[in-house]
Length: 198
Image (cartoon, rainbow, N blue to C red; front, top):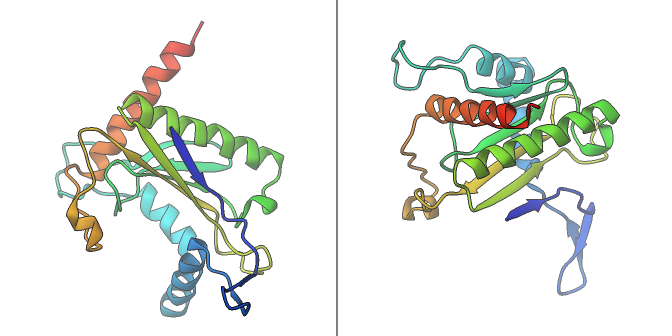
């Protein structure tokens, strides 16, 4: 089962009392963070984030295990395991170039996003996910900011990794290092490719 949350929301919403107020989308949290990041460090967040993903070192400090967080990429998108997962086995997807919402995505970008979304869900399913929640974090349609990129988060429900009480307290305890999760996902993607070859 796949549950997908899209970020196409109106600019204003009406309250039960009939008053209009600004709407909220999860992408607004990202906008706020990248604005603070740019003010603090003088550079765009997403370029820095992509560089950090490419130059990752293991969370446990060991040098003998896999260190890459990247699962798959093409000319347009990057599919990866985030360093700080908010859910066990979380996978994320983002454009490699400035594309803040689906309306800014040209046809090659949309095709790349579609392929990566399918790969993410199939990979998590092959690892035992019974349910995958996909959240789209996008910038506002009227935002001129070119730093905020479209970001998808795939959060699986795995039978051997149930939600914990700590999540309700905004503390996430993961039983695996993100680099090892990424390695397991890459192996699953490789197996999928082998099964589809003639």
